[in-house]
Length: 142
Picture 1 (cartoon, helix red, strand yellow):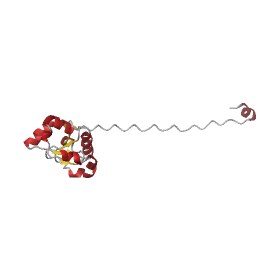
Picture 2 (cartoon, rainbow, N blue to C red):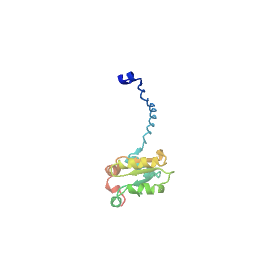
Picture 3 (cartoon, rainbow, N blue to C red):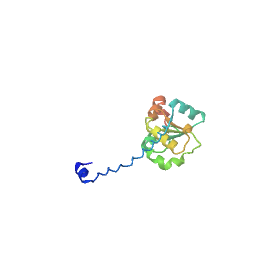
């Protein structure tokens, strides 16, 4: 109370107390990271050779695919995958392949996020570079 208000009989009104803010909601739990299987070039070649071949999706540019690709590989440029993903059956094993095996990890995770079984999707470890290192340029289909 101020001294003037005390002398003249007016009391200071206490300042209104603000309602305490409600506590913030708890943070949403972090989603579990998507784990993408990787397949080694030798494992993929063995599967291609013994008839249990997965669908191999070559995600490189068209001219790169035309210059040489894993025998039987389907060409689907990385930017086409969202529009064309329904061309890939959910009941088949699928191996994504790019140049070095990094972008194919992302494409694999994308399919898994969109309902494909994580156990049926894989990325070629080392990509085309790993395949050519293991089997040479002569192993490619043109």
